[in-house]
Image (cartoon, rainbow, N blue to C red; front, side):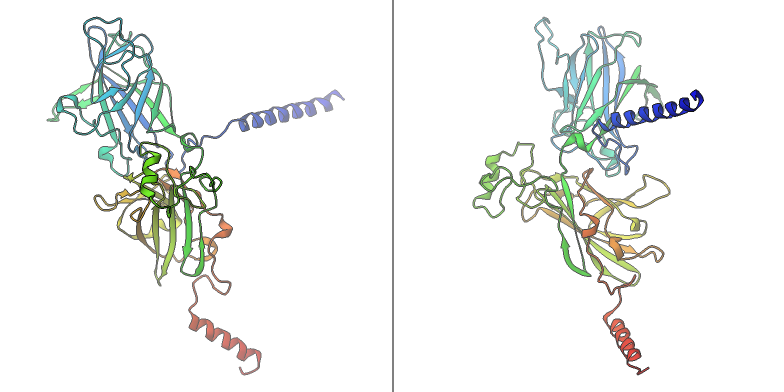
Length: 453
């Protein structure tokens, strides 16, 4: 009897443990830090000690944006950390601490920053040359790696005091935080790595850092904002239905008597209303819509040719408080493997998985439409995409021609439910049938039915 009971009890115990583990995992809110369209994307902060001083060291800190399409826009990044000991920042080049802190114990030379947990920001363009280093002074704006790799890094230099003066006495800072410009990034602990090697300008000599450590930061859209920031609407030439963004995609309008929730585009003196809300307000000032999103992306299936099909993409800005500079759009669709031409948008294929080429990054042409203006008459950009048909996969049925996923500036947009997509008429086949062929088929069927054939 004991032999029979023991396996049952063992099985029950394993099931109980498994159930408790599942419930424990479910108690945590997912932050979606893993991005399936950019699985290796991250921001890496590299801290290179380049020389020792009497009471510390001089270091160059570089922020590398290794994310394919998520960039840091104005007002730029801010980097914070907590010193391990009683370090101070004597001076900085290419950046500055936002607060000096209490430096009352110092006589004579006063440090640049005495805070235990300083916050550093980039300098603005146009700063004097003696305060600059390479990759600095862009107002904290960093491009994405795929869009502009030459501007995908930002650097500053700092002289640290009351710190160690050898590799064995230096203590790594901790509790790194990165705002770009708001929350969203979570930074891991600093990790000592192989010293960075530097090439001289004439490329004839290589030097290396005395000590190097890295900090890796990953992005979570859930941490950045609790609600989405964009939505998608759909339409097609073969159906009169225009599928709007889902209602309340990014929030719902408040009651009609409360004007703080959104701005009526038909309100008199609109400009004065927007200015009174404050241009320095980081929160979006959104036009009143059913979806309440700052950004709407519209995908319209425009034309059907024998060997090609054509799509029109329109991005509309409903935010009165924001010009989106260096915007980008990431679209996932199986036919991007056969994209023939993109009109008035730059295009680059993104292949997060080498065997599948179904993801494209689109962004504006410099000095033409690389800035998406704030809400209003000029607050939209548009282009058309020409695809070649793959006969083995192409169809207009069941919403195949609509995108699977769309990101704007790295944030996942809300898609309409699949059952709301514009569908082909019931009489249509895999390829759209012309009215003449359809009429001939109907007449033939009638003739057969009444015995004329």
